[in-house]
Length: 255
Image 1 (cartoon, rainbow, N blue to C red):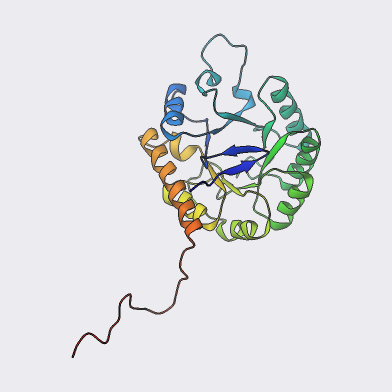
Image 2 (image 1 turned 45 degrees about the vertical axis):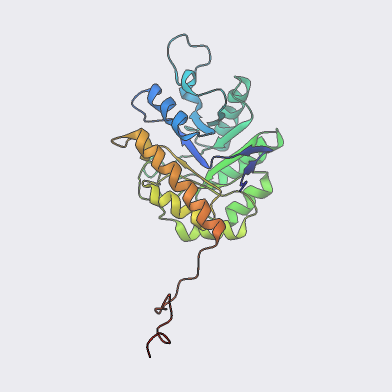
Protein backbone atom coordinates (compact mmCIF):
# COMPACT_ATOMS: atom_id res chain seq x y z
CA UNK A 1 0.00 0.00 0.00
CA UNK A 2 1.41 3.36 -1.06
CA UNK A 3 1.22 5.87 1.77
CA UNK A 4 3.37 8.91 1.07
CA UNK A 5 3.70 12.17 2.99
CA UNK A 6 3.83 15.28 0.82
CA UNK A 7 5.25 18.51 2.24
CA UNK A 8 6.03 21.52 0.12
CA UNK A 9 5.74 19.47 -3.06
CA UNK A 10 8.24 16.86 -1.82
CA UNK A 11 7.10 13.26 -1.44
CA UNK A 12 8.44 11.36 1.56
CA UNK A 13 8.14 7.67 2.32
CA UNK A 14 9.76 7.68 5.76
CA UNK A 15 7.84 9.48 8.50
CA UNK A 16 10.68 9.45 11.04
CA UNK A 17 12.60 12.74 10.98
CA UNK A 18 15.97 12.90 12.74
CA UNK A 19 17.77 15.64 14.66
CA UNK A 20 21.56 15.59 14.49
CA UNK A 21 22.59 17.00 17.87
CA UNK A 22 23.95 15.07 20.87
CA UNK A 23 25.40 12.12 18.93
CA UNK A 24 28.75 11.07 20.37
CA UNK A 25 30.29 11.32 16.90
CA UNK A 26 29.09 12.19 13.39
CA UNK A 27 29.78 8.73 11.97
CA UNK A 28 27.24 7.24 14.40
CA UNK A 29 24.61 9.68 13.17
CA UNK A 30 25.36 8.66 9.58
CA UNK A 31 25.02 4.99 10.50
CA UNK A 32 21.63 5.68 12.07
CA UNK A 33 20.47 7.41 8.89
CA UNK A 34 21.64 4.51 6.71
CA UNK A 35 19.98 1.82 8.82
CA UNK A 36 16.63 3.58 9.18
CA UNK A 37 16.29 5.19 5.76
CA UNK A 38 15.53 8.57 7.34
CA UNK A 39 14.88 11.13 4.59
CA UNK A 40 14.58 14.40 6.55
CA UNK A 41 17.44 15.55 8.75
CA UNK A 42 17.45 18.78 10.74
CA UNK A 43 20.66 20.61 11.63
CA UNK A 44 21.20 23.83 13.55
CA UNK A 45 22.79 26.36 11.21
CA UNK A 46 25.44 27.21 13.81
CA UNK A 47 26.71 23.62 13.50
CA UNK A 48 27.15 23.84 9.72
CA UNK A 49 30.34 25.00 8.04
CA UNK A 50 30.10 24.40 4.30
CA UNK A 51 33.71 25.53 3.73
CA UNK A 52 35.44 23.72 6.58
CA UNK A 53 38.21 21.33 5.59
CA UNK A 54 38.10 19.42 8.86
CA UNK A 55 35.31 17.00 9.73
CA UNK A 56 31.91 18.60 10.16
CA UNK A 57 28.36 17.31 10.42
CA UNK A 58 27.52 17.95 6.75
CA UNK A 59 30.10 15.40 5.63
CA UNK A 60 27.99 12.72 7.31
CA UNK A 61 24.53 13.63 6.02
CA UNK A 62 23.88 11.53 2.89
CA UNK A 63 23.22 13.58 -0.24
CA UNK A 64 19.87 11.89 -0.77
CA UNK A 65 18.59 13.25 2.56
CA UNK A 66 16.50 16.40 2.61
CA UNK A 67 18.31 18.91 4.80
CA UNK A 68 16.08 21.00 7.05
CA UNK A 69 18.18 23.66 8.80
CA UNK A 70 16.64 25.01 11.99
CA UNK A 71 16.87 28.46 13.51
CA UNK A 72 18.02 27.23 16.92
CA UNK A 73 19.34 30.17 18.92
CA UNK A 74 16.86 32.68 17.50
CA UNK A 75 15.15 34.73 20.22
CA UNK A 76 12.71 36.59 17.97
CA UNK A 77 11.28 36.58 14.46
CA UNK A 78 13.95 38.91 13.10
CA UNK A 79 16.76 36.58 14.18
CA UNK A 80 14.95 33.51 12.83
CA UNK A 81 14.46 35.16 9.43
CA UNK A 82 18.12 36.15 9.27
CA UNK A 83 19.27 32.61 10.07
CA UNK A 84 16.93 31.13 7.45
CA UNK A 85 18.21 33.48 4.76
CA UNK A 86 21.82 32.66 5.62
CA UNK A 87 21.07 28.93 5.45
CA UNK A 88 19.55 29.21 1.98
CA UNK A 89 22.33 31.46 0.73
CA UNK A 90 24.85 28.90 1.98
CA UNK A 91 23.25 26.19 -0.14
CA UNK A 92 21.09 24.43 2.45
CA UNK A 93 17.94 24.55 0.34
CA UNK A 94 14.59 26.18 1.04
CA UNK A 95 13.25 23.96 3.82
CA UNK A 96 13.49 25.62 7.22
CA UNK A 97 12.39 24.63 10.70
CA UNK A 98 11.52 27.76 12.65
CA UNK A 99 12.59 27.72 16.29
CA UNK A 100 12.12 30.94 18.23
CA UNK A 101 12.94 30.49 21.90
CA UNK A 102 13.52 33.28 24.40
CA UNK A 103 12.66 31.21 27.47
CA UNK A 104 15.95 29.71 28.65
CA UNK A 105 14.53 27.61 31.50
CA UNK A 106 11.95 25.39 29.80
CA UNK A 107 13.02 26.21 26.22
CA UNK A 108 9.43 26.67 25.13
CA UNK A 109 8.81 28.21 21.69
CA UNK A 110 7.37 31.69 21.32
CA UNK A 111 4.28 31.18 19.16
CA UNK A 112 3.77 34.88 18.45
CA UNK A 113 7.27 35.46 17.09
CA UNK A 114 7.13 32.11 15.26
CA UNK A 115 4.01 33.21 13.37
CA UNK A 116 5.71 36.45 12.34
CA UNK A 117 8.80 34.61 11.05
CA UNK A 118 6.66 32.04 9.23
CA UNK A 119 4.73 34.71 7.33
CA UNK A 120 7.89 36.49 6.16
CA UNK A 121 9.72 33.33 5.09
CA UNK A 122 6.72 31.71 3.39
CA UNK A 123 6.34 34.83 1.25
CA UNK A 124 10.01 34.45 0.30
CA UNK A 125 9.45 30.92 -0.99
CA UNK A 126 10.69 28.90 1.96
CA UNK A 127 9.03 25.64 2.92
CA UNK A 128 8.40 26.57 6.54
CA UNK A 129 7.92 24.02 9.32
CA UNK A 130 7.39 25.92 12.57
CA UNK A 131 8.09 24.39 15.99
CA UNK A 132 5.36 25.55 18.35
CA UNK A 133 3.43 25.11 21.55
CA UNK A 134 0.31 23.10 20.64
CA UNK A 135 -2.31 25.83 20.62
CA UNK A 136 -5.20 25.72 18.18
CA UNK A 137 -5.45 29.44 17.46
CA UNK A 138 -1.69 29.71 16.93
CA UNK A 139 -1.77 26.70 14.59
CA UNK A 140 -4.56 28.30 12.55
CA UNK A 141 -2.53 31.49 12.24
CA UNK A 142 0.54 29.50 11.20
CA UNK A 143 -1.48 27.92 8.42
CA UNK A 144 -2.75 31.34 7.32
CA UNK A 145 0.85 32.59 7.40
CA UNK A 146 1.87 29.90 4.91
CA UNK A 147 3.34 27.10 7.02
CA UNK A 148 3.84 23.83 5.10
CA UNK A 149 3.37 21.80 8.30
CA UNK A 150 3.02 22.40 12.02
CA UNK A 151 5.43 20.90 14.56
CA UNK A 152 3.95 20.92 18.09
CA UNK A 153 6.06 19.78 21.03
CA UNK A 154 5.11 16.60 22.87
CA UNK A 155 7.02 17.72 25.97
CA UNK A 156 9.86 20.17 26.68
CA UNK A 157 12.74 19.63 24.30
CA UNK A 158 15.24 16.98 25.36
CA UNK A 159 13.07 15.85 28.30
CA UNK A 160 12.13 12.36 26.97
CA UNK A 161 8.80 12.73 28.80
CA UNK A 162 6.60 11.71 25.89
CA UNK A 163 3.19 13.04 24.89
CA UNK A 164 2.51 15.41 27.76
CA UNK A 165 0.51 17.63 25.37
CA UNK A 166 -1.41 14.72 23.86
CA UNK A 167 -4.90 16.19 23.97
CA UNK A 168 -3.79 19.51 22.51
CA UNK A 169 -1.99 17.69 19.68
CA UNK A 170 -5.12 15.62 19.05
CA UNK A 171 -7.10 18.85 18.61
CA UNK A 172 -4.57 20.10 16.05
CA UNK A 173 -4.73 16.81 14.14
CA UNK A 174 -8.52 16.94 14.08
CA UNK A 175 -8.73 20.60 13.08
CA UNK A 176 -5.72 21.81 11.09
CA UNK A 177 -5.53 20.77 7.43
CA UNK A 178 -1.73 20.51 7.44
CA UNK A 179 0.68 17.70 8.35
CA UNK A 180 1.12 17.66 12.12
CA UNK A 181 4.65 16.54 13.03
CA UNK A 182 5.25 15.82 16.70
CA UNK A 183 8.56 17.37 17.65
CA UNK A 184 10.45 17.39 20.96
CA UNK A 185 10.05 15.36 24.12
CA UNK A 186 9.44 11.86 22.74
CA UNK A 187 11.57 9.43 24.74
CA UNK A 188 10.32 5.95 23.82
CA UNK A 189 9.32 4.23 20.56
CA UNK A 190 5.93 3.47 22.12
CA UNK A 191 5.31 7.22 22.44
CA UNK A 192 6.14 7.71 18.76
CA UNK A 193 3.73 4.90 17.88
CA UNK A 194 1.03 6.54 19.99
CA UNK A 195 1.51 9.86 18.21
CA UNK A 196 1.22 8.15 14.83
CA UNK A 197 -1.86 6.19 15.93
CA UNK A 198 -3.50 9.54 16.75
CA UNK A 199 -2.94 10.66 13.17
CA UNK A 200 0.30 12.60 13.37
CA UNK A 201 1.93 12.81 9.93
CA UNK A 202 5.44 12.22 11.28
CA UNK A 203 7.63 12.58 14.35
CA UNK A 204 11.02 14.20 14.84
CA UNK A 205 13.39 12.55 17.33
CA UNK A 206 16.89 13.40 18.47
CA UNK A 207 17.72 13.11 22.19
CA UNK A 208 15.95 9.78 22.70
CA UNK A 209 18.07 8.20 19.97
CA UNK A 210 21.37 10.04 20.36
CA UNK A 211 21.63 9.52 24.12
CA UNK A 212 20.40 5.90 24.26
CA UNK A 213 22.83 3.20 25.37
CA UNK A 214 22.64 1.83 21.83
CA UNK A 215 21.60 4.72 19.54
CA UNK A 216 21.51 2.58 16.41
CA UNK A 217 19.21 -0.03 17.94
CA UNK A 218 17.00 2.69 19.42
CA UNK A 219 16.72 4.40 16.04
CA UNK A 220 15.66 1.14 14.42
CA UNK A 221 13.07 0.69 17.19
CA UNK A 222 11.69 4.20 16.58
CA UNK A 223 11.55 3.53 12.86
CA UNK A 224 9.47 0.37 13.38
CA UNK A 225 7.26 2.16 15.91
CA UNK A 226 6.49 5.01 13.52
CA UNK A 227 5.56 2.56 10.78
CA UNK A 228 3.42 0.46 13.14
CA UNK A 229 1.63 3.51 14.48
CA UNK A 230 0.89 4.77 11.00
CA UNK A 231 -0.50 1.39 9.92
CA UNK A 232 -2.70 1.28 13.02
CA UNK A 233 -4.06 4.74 12.22
CA UNK A 234 -4.83 3.73 8.64
CA UNK A 235 -6.46 0.51 9.84
CA UNK A 236 -8.89 2.44 12.04
CA UNK A 237 -8.62 1.13 15.62
CA UNK A 238 -11.79 -0.34 17.11
CA UNK A 239 -13.64 1.81 19.63
CA UNK A 240 -12.83 1.40 23.32
CA UNK A 241 -15.65 0.15 25.56
CA UNK A 242 -16.40 0.40 29.27
CA UNK A 243 -17.68 -3.19 29.54
CA UNK A 244 -16.42 -6.58 28.42
CA UNK A 245 -17.57 -8.20 25.20
CA UNK A 246 -16.77 -11.82 24.39
CA UNK A 247 -14.87 -12.41 21.18
CA UNK A 248 -16.73 -15.69 20.59
CA UNK A 249 -20.30 -16.83 21.47
CA UNK A 250 -20.93 -17.82 25.09
CA UNK A 251 -24.03 -19.91 24.26
CA UNK A 252 -25.15 -22.39 21.64
CA UNK A 253 -22.31 -24.91 21.84
CA UNK A 254 -23.40 -26.94 24.90
CA UNK A 255 -26.43 -29.24 24.73
